[in-house]
Structure formats: C-alpha cells, structure tokens
Length: 275
Image 1: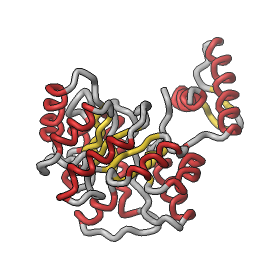
Image 2: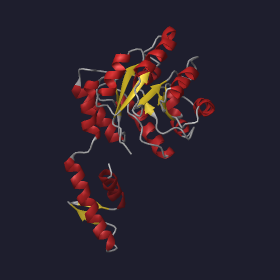
Image 3: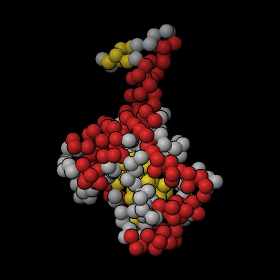
Image 4: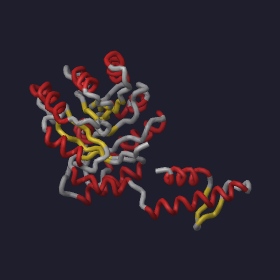
C-alpha cells in the first residue's frame, strides 16, 4: 500500500494549478469545489477541472460541496463520470448525511468510490466515531481546523493547544473505527516553515500519519516529518530481530538498549519496518 503523507489542495477553477500540482511531489491532490469556488461558478469549475485531468487519476481526491448545499449530487456525478475514485465531504457532522451520500454513490456508480469525511465543526468532532463508521466506503477522516476554530470561537495559536482535544478525538475515532489514520489539518502560513514543522510534529505525536497542505512549498517539510529516517528504520529492524530471536526461546520481554521491550514495542517497530 502506498503511504500518503501530503495532500495538496488545489482550486478547481485553476486548471493550470491542477496540472502543476500533478507534476509536484505531493502524494495526493485534493481538487476543491467548495470554499475556493463562488456559488455562481460551481458548474464552470466542474467543467474546468475536467479539462485538466490526465489519464492517471489515482492521486486525485475531489472535495465536493457539503450535504446542505444544492451542489453535492452534481459534484459526485462529476467524480463518477470522470474516473475520480475518492471524494472528500466537507463539514461532515453526522452519520446520516454521509449515509445519504453513500446511497447516492451506490446508485450512480458501479465502482467503489472512497469517502473521506472532513470534520470541521464541534458537532462533527462530537460524532467523529459515528461518521468514521457510517459507511463501508469511508476509508479515513480528516480534520479542518480553520472552520472548527471559527465554530467554537477559539483563537488559533502557534503551539496548537486549542486543537489538542479535537485532533486527539479524531485520531482515537479512526482507530476505534478500524479505518486508516486520519489527515491532519492544514497549516495556513505559507512563509512560516518553523510553524509548519511544529504543527506537523505535534500531529505526528498525536497519531496522524499525514497532513493536508495548501502550497507545494510545504511538501518537503511534511514528507520529512512523516517519513521514517534510515536510522530509525535500521534501529527498528535491529529491535525486531532481537525480539524475534528471544521469542523463539519462549521469551516475550527483553532488555534492549536500556529499554524493556515487550509485544507492544515490538509491534510498533515491526510496523515501522513495513513502512
């Protein structure tokens, strides 16, 4: 399985930006039909994005409009008809809304289209587990901090403590639902590499394995943080080897480099070697 670390947002109204994004090192591209497109331009945006699509659409995700808009059905049809097999649902707040979209997809497509609910409100955070388990097509969920901070009335800060509960709740809901790790929120300051790094590092500590981004210049920092170093991989391989040798002798706990290693630590290292 390809490990996706970076998810780059691109406005659907900008075909040239879509083409450049596809040529970038981003692991996945989110073509946005929602916030970056004016209400009167939704149909025009769908037409423009279609012109920019190439043969390989595996990296593409289409962010459709939310359930309460009059556009989401046409957005899903755009994805279905043009071979985009992943859609992101913004402002996901309930399992029922995701289920309705799932039913529509099943009626319109013979292919399995992955659903990525984007949770951006207090209600969405509260029902994150229900959303994560709402459909067999939900492969992962994502967190949007900008709308969330507006919804709860908090101030976004450099240390990100105001988002700690929401981010942790989404990570926990994903694990409990047995879906893939969630996507961490964007970092909005384009010229603050230190801030982006701090945000990504905190996300990694909390259990995120990837981050949404808004510019190609953010790709490398995100990749560096969410990719294991060769030193980390080698250390993990040695730990796994030492533990498995002990396990063959009936030993399930060993001392390794001044640490007590048992099955949870072994499984963590084993998972890293399979990265």
